Length: 270
Length: 335
Ligand SMILES: Nc1ncnc2c1ncn2[C@@H]1O[C@H](COP(=O)(O)OP(=O)(O)OP(=O)(O)O)[C@@H](O)[C@H]1O
Ligand SMILES: [Mg+2]
Image (tube, each protein chain N blue to C red):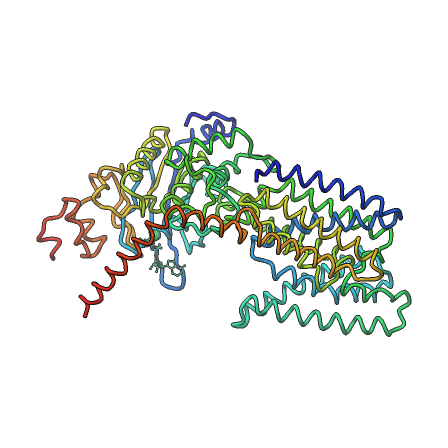
């Protein structure tokens, strides 16, 4: 994407400070009483693809929501490019694990993707030809160009997910949170999406991805955050994605580790 | 049927009807009432789309019924029948009602819709009591407050008509300029918040617009039925399109037709109340939409289904046959 409207130039200027895209410090969050995240701290380097790995219920989605202020946090600090998220909203894109929209709403795929541009329009600005072109381009990137005028309830689950991914792309953010973008998409689409994420990376954008398939972690991500209520490990993939740390993260439930070719059979059995 | 062709044809037909109506409406006073009811229907139809899509259909009803005691108290205090005071009274009553609903849902296990039902009937009961007091009490100029139950457009005076028209235009203007905000807040409030929209503000604003539409509509359509002028056109419009912009426009047109019909018929056919006629017109449009709507109407669905069946009929039957055989084999195997 080589769009250079005035807005993104200001973004570039804001980003010139050395502040990292995301700095999480001592983040603790709870739904009822029991904390589902405890003292989570990590700092993301600009231009990286970061994988967030952990078992079901580890708090991966909660971490993203708490970082984005969608659920209140008990303690801790989250800085986006050195400032609180509230001041940096336009720099951040988020694709939730499950969209909770009204699927029956009178809107089609193209229209949803155009919503990604609303943040760049003024108070009374209306999406026009330019927004439409960008939206079409983003739909094409996720392989959904043929479905542009489909009402959204008439798309398959994977297609719906791709539409919302395209909306995030249309936002032209600098830091993306994507909660399991590969869940329920076919192999070809997964390939297309990872190529897309790599393109974003090349543009200097930072993408944080919740991911479940351990077999592809080393191939996809520069850094890895191992999460299970607490941070079990964070760093470059080759340093952190180790048997030992994975074992601790998943607490022995690692039968499917052998698919990644990492674990020896005797370890997975124990 | 292409959208453009359909639109131009209706507008041509609409023009003809308008001309006949114009001739009918010799009385300039009646003409203004006609215009204001049309505008009222238009704005209610537009606002209604957002209420409907935000699943607040019942809220409009609650606010309308809650408005009655507010109007009565406003009249008792000021002794005048001015839309402005009524608006304030009804608005305050609406706030109290909303607050009451919140209180009930928070401090009991009663669900939101039941709470609305309770508040709605409670306020309406109070309104009827106050109305009776006003009718029998020593309030001069009281004749006509009962018109607020079913609406009587013909009883509106010049200033009422002017207020109604201006407020309606104002509502439409706001919806035009804040269309994208209203759309996003209705569709995906989480995302709207994410890109920095103050979702709370826009939700409050939409609610306020609905209160205003309800209150200004009361004199013409009546407390009991004004909410259906907000919801019915929106529901009907949804049968014709999968685009919000088109839906809002169609809903506005449906509302306008309903309002105009109500005003015309009630003024020509002796003293029929406006509200029921308006709502009947809206309901007729709903039935038409339900049957013939170009996107979700029963007829179009049946046609599509039949065409599919004819094309795939053979394949389906074959598949069904093999499936049932498979099933039988599976069952036997299970036994
Ligand atoms: N709305 C909620 N109310 C109460 N508890 C919740 C809520 N959402 C999540 N939890 C709990 O918080 C914990 C973390 O949930 P979270 O959704 O963050 O897990 P996750 O790591 O994203 O899991 P998954 O891989 O299944 O998506 C879980 O134990 C879950 O039961
Ligand atoms: Mg999750």
